[in-house]
Amino acid sequence: MARKYFGTDGIRGRANGKITPELALKVGQAAGLVFKRGEHRHRVLIGKDTRLSGYMIEYALVAGFTSIGMDVMLTGPIPTPGMAMLTRSMRCDIGVMISASHNAYEDNGIKLFGPDGYKLSDVVELAIEELLEADLSNRLAGSGQIGRARRIDDAQARYIEFAKRTLPRNMELDGLRIVIDCANGAGYKVAPQALWELGAEVIPMGVEPDGFNINRDLGSTAPHALQQKVREMRADIGIALDGDADRVILVDEKGHVVDGDQLMAVITESWHQDGRLSKPGLVATIMSNLGLERHLEGLGLSLARTTVGDRYVLEHMREHGFNVGGEQSGHIILSDYSTTGDGLIAALQVLAVVQKEGRPVSEVCRRFEPLPQILKNVKTAGGQPLKDAGVSAAIETIRASLGKGGRLVIRPSGTEPVIRVMAEGDDRDLVARVVDDVCAVIAKAA
Image 1 (cartoon, rainbow, N blue to C red):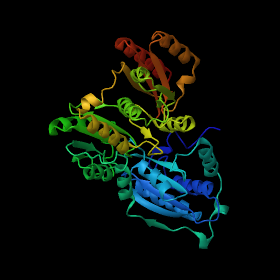
Image 2 (cartoon, rainbow, N blue to C red):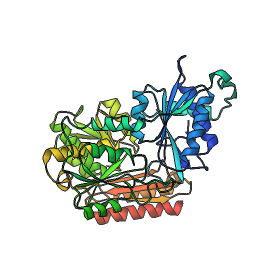
Image 3 (cartoon, helix red, strand yellow):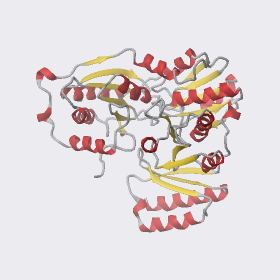
Image 4 (cartoon, one colour):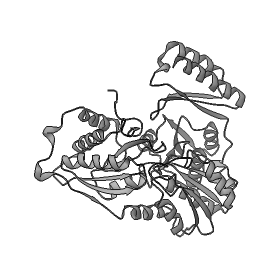
């Protein structure tokens, strides 16, 4: 059954376009009914990032959940991984994060977590979608069973303490000057506070959200301002989160960006040396660089690849027993601590290696030489050019030109109306030519 509402990371779209109060209310009712199990008083935890539309969606969800008899607790702005952790630790029946992650403020989304803190399976999402299309008027709670809603004040403090405890015992960040870019998003309070409490000198950026400026020229998808600030302040490291703080990229003391592939290499190698890997390797996606795969092979470690999306990485990790995984974009999942990507905790694990080795970040975080890799997007306006037989044939011809030492990955985005074209190989000019040729073929058909 094709999914109408859920994408690769919850339900996402233009606020007051696809993501309306009516839809949010129905999501609350549908998700609540799917997770109502037993006769106990059910509880829902709702968090959000800093988008203007968060208020609208938040109260519509409250109406939906309370109308079917579930009590609601509201946390205010908090990172997505914080929501996942609190859903489980506070014994809630369901957790909801209102966020469109790295998208601009005009978009918003609804991410759902089960009582175990994990994102929902395809089966559960389909069950919710069926109810979204149904008439639920005869399944509402009676007048005396309507749920209550209240705000809780300690959610952020709980998450800060949880994150701090992931550092090795007795390790602090004294002596480190850290620039932290919170993208004017969900981590704008908790991330700088956690780093400061751990002893670092903290220089915050992107900590003045106004409802409109989330991810605007800041954060993990726009690190230029952070690169400049790190050089200007002569900082030891820069940390950039995205809008809901579930992904991270770093900037070394020279102002160079460190992506998720290098971060996974640092953490995996360190955990391997300490005997902390549950399996000898990590899980990443088809987008991770071949250089990472070759580096791990040299250490006797494996790289298992999945389709794009941190949920698929996590599914493979759980099924096969890995405890490190992630995406090149900076979604790093460390299942010893989290049930989803956590930008702050991933950054803390890298900082622990920096402190342990006593070397500059530029040395610690350059574990391998990446192969030339180029990624471009082709707008589709909702079309499906990849299903055209002529397009498929042309792409296969172009793919053959890369040879056995290269890779070509073409996939529709799960969050935007674009097709992503990525190629990599040892010859940069050839890689660039392949990407341009494929994009031209797709654009013509689209």
